[in-house]
Length: 374
Image (cartoon, rainbow, N blue to C red):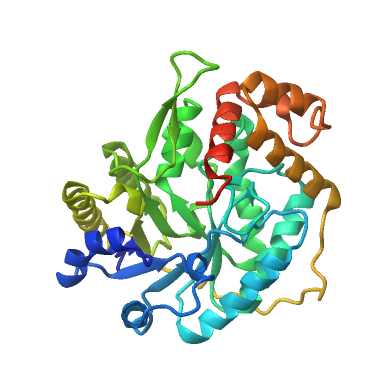
């Protein structure tokens, strides 16, 4: 029977490594997920970190997770071309079991600024992203996938997200990272029922599950409404562990369960102990369900023919650029609404008429928080 691997998101960060070290020493970590593009600007990775990566690479337990590619950007950038070049280089050094990226487009113009936000779910964005996924696949020659997005502007976005992911992934034999804290955000923010939302996702494509913590933010536009944010800066809530136990049996091709947390939330010994406690809880659940999954799908991709010149969508890029400007510069929710209505977004596939006020407010907060970089 397949064995679920208990994993940690492990990057070159002292707080995170301090938190994870006792787990490595106890030989409890069965795989690591590495955000490889966070180090693209570093000329040389420290030898000890390379050795750690090689250890897991040698036993097919290293998975790569991209952050900055900006899959849905309407304009093909030199930064994306460089990203693929660096990915190819890293894949000659390490053996990844799969490579994944975030859903959405980055709100920042520069490579390491901005935050991922959603896009219109239409034929144009579908074709654009499928092309980008094929380029990633041809570059790394391992299974490729996407992570579901925590943020949504509207209830329609939430309901359609799973099917849109399926349309993106199925033609490339792609896989899905199902982030359960992201799901938790949507369940709370849009007051949805688990059984109602879970049926919309292609669970047969789930090869990896993420769990993490987050934070609450009070809405100004909707008094009394608390927004759940995917900030990765707290311990994993009990509700997310409950989602994990509910979801694992529904994912027949699941291989990894990964604990994520940002280093800013691992400053103290108490926080690091909480991280370790969360991992042991994750590991116990993974062990309990390791015999549930009856088969493992082969996600290995074929070689794709792609045009030498990547397709672009000038209209989409213009809208994305304008939306980013509005979110980063808006002085209030009301100001953002006025700017959107007078900037060509009304009565378009963006469907701003259906956006929840508290989610536009959240988008403004996200964009302004990260406009100077992660």
